[in-house]
Image (tube, rainbow, N blue to C red; front, side, top):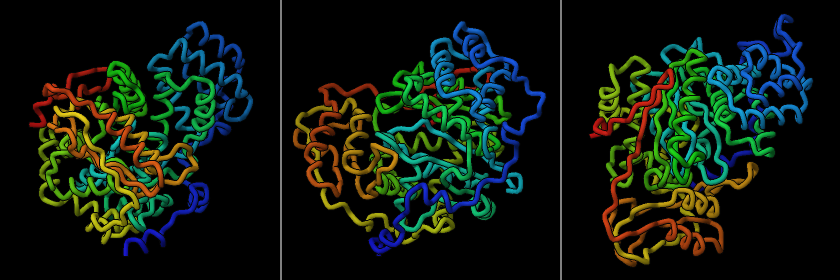
Amino acid sequence: MHRALLTRFTRPSTALRLSRREPFRKVTQPFSSFPSTLDHSQSPSAFISDKRYGKEHTSDEIMSFIDRYQRDEVKDYQMSAWLMAVCLKGMTPEETAALTKCMVMSGDIADLSDVPGTSVDKHSTGGVGDKISLILAPLVASFGLVVPMMSGRGLGHTGGTLDKLDSIPGFSCDLDMNNFKKILRTVGVAMISPAGDMAPVDKRIYALRDVTSTVRAIPLQTSSIMCKKLAENPESLVLDVKFGSGAFNHEVEESIELAKSMVEAGEGDNKQTTAFITSMDEPIGWAVGNWNEIHESIQVLSNENNPLSADLVDLVVVQCGQMLLQGGVASDLAEGIAMAKENLKNGKALAKFHEMVEAQGGSLEAVKDPKSYPAAKHKIEVTSTRSGYVSAIDALAVGLVGVDLGAGRQFVEDDVDFSAGIELLKKTGDKVSEGDVLAILSTNRDGVGQVGAQKVEGAYKVDEAVPTPRQLITNIVRKGGLVEAFDSSLLK
């Protein structure tokens, strides 16, 4: 039955799917219609020169420059020069917030004013095995809050939430705004791909950054990430900013700086914003790959208490607790965490997940019996060549093997294999003996399994001594650049 469903619901290309949808209703004018009082007297070269010499731009200067770029009066080579100047000289929080706001206003902004309830959303900077949103969104909605979540597809070693949802037979992520809001009114949660023309200037600027070595600059990272999330227009936002081998930023200090900048941008748009700094040094949970991660998410929602999912559960309940606090449901983070754990135990979160799946056309049969999903053609066991304790698992290496198996993309136009992936049977801290199975690879591709197995075995570090437990959540970042150490006792 599931195989027939998978064939029936084969999805067309992203471009074709998007062409069928209705756009968002505009709630702001495009820059080309901004009042004539906007001052365009400063030349692009003078604007670039100011940043080259470290001068702070005013909000109006940034708005004018972006306005003219959107109307092709500022050329790509001039924008590229300014981007490099930003990389070298930086931007103040005020400049970054202004740039983010300009990018938001360059396109469509979701209007959720006719959806009753308090809306809260979450964004992660991505990682390997990061299926947090799949559990978190219905869990938060099970308390009566509205979760209008728009997500992306995977590229490279990081998986995409939409690809995981697409693996559910029949599930549609490509809803127009009317249907999106209809489900939010009736179910309280919907997870879709961004509709309409959201932040179009960011797409142009990111294409330049990608080829001019200007990607890794915190102000530019902030504006690019936050403009799309703010265009979705939730009332408050919780951020999961990751660090480690499987994250974009490897060092915790760099992730803290990015989080401070992102929180400032969110607060600058009058949305309560909080960020958690979390480790991405090893894959989250036991599952890597699209249906694998749906399966693990269903396990957690079903309260199966798999110890291999302990880190996943901790991340979910903490972020849920904060969203409940910001949504006015919990009085503090501790209460929010306790409430989150309770709704995972009592089945309310799972019931809400089933409601969402059904509302978006997904097969309840598949999600109620995940083990019956069509299996990949090849299964390869990864065995340990050493005895001792697992002291580390290189998340990046595991994620790249997932791409080789077909679970991820090397290029945007690549298809993904929903049944491909990696099942981790051992996590950091576990005792292993030589010959024990560390992981199982699944793929429909011929000739990639053995090489992948060698790479995954190499991603495991096994030492004689019991490792010191890693700190999964290191910090909380709040408004005003306030950075606090996370109290791990909240999870006990």
